[in-house]
Length: 67
Image 1 (cartoon, rainbow, N blue to C red):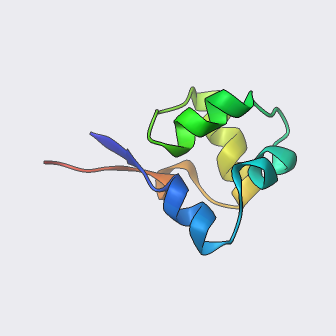
Image 2: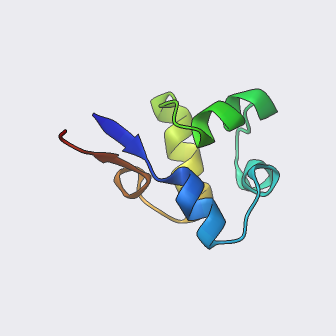
């Protein structure tokens, strides 16, 4: 199961969703970003854009966890 660490990462960096959207090459709708931050797994292209905007790898943001 994939788990998102995006909410924690944004909090650690004192960033809001809007700050992340401004850094993205292909920003998504506010509602989509809200869903992603709250745990929805994004399309690969969006995940890649978010990771690039944060200077991270995708697998640092979305991690595979076994139950």
